[in-house]
Image 1 (cartoon, each protein chain N blue to C red):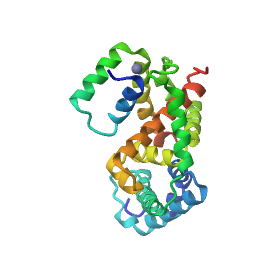
Image 2 (cartoon, chains in turn purple, orange):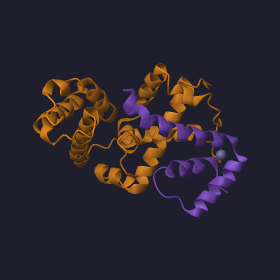
Image 3 (tube, rainbow over the protein chains, first blue to last red):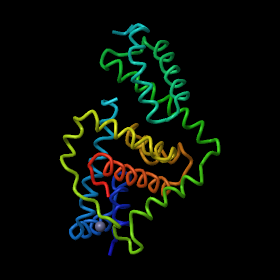
Image 4 (cartoon, protein in one colour):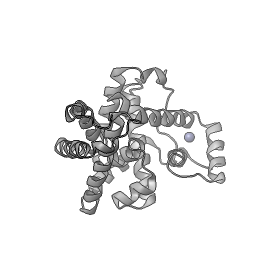
Length: 58
Length: 187
Ligand SMILES: [Zn+2]
């Protein structure tokens, strides 16, 4: 079973490399049960969006 | 307009400086790359196509100049060991021994609205500034300059795994900083 520390690593890496099916399933399973990681997942998406908008906000 | 005049280029100077500062975080280096960019732009303005906006075109040149600089620097040994240790402390503080969150992330209230708020962007820039230099550089190469992880590893002369670790730490640090200083989840 994936713990939060490794789950956040995978969530982060999903932005940097293709994630395997097995990894994706493990993440989904964890996210179903973990509210903290669900918040983290949304916040990562927000951080990416914000950083990519940064050039327009300078 | 294939002959934009030098004056028009200089209008974009302060923007380019801020752009370069985010990636390089060194006023002298930022000044240098922007100067080189403007010179290259003036020399190459015949090649400027009317299809793109002058700023987009200038940022394109600037990105190349920044890359050249980072490439040169990557060859010089300068990796700070202490920096890596600091970053491990962050991960250790965020997670318990058993791998669970020490303090699970709470919901962020109306994050989309923050993007329209000028204060948010100040906090965001400050949070970026607070990251250790090499972490911030890798993160900005990935998210701001939109380089692939492979390109970043190559440019920084580090392994792919190391690259993922650095990018992850950057995101953890940024999330923590925004959580505390913008979304008001101070503990
Ligand atoms: Zn979790």
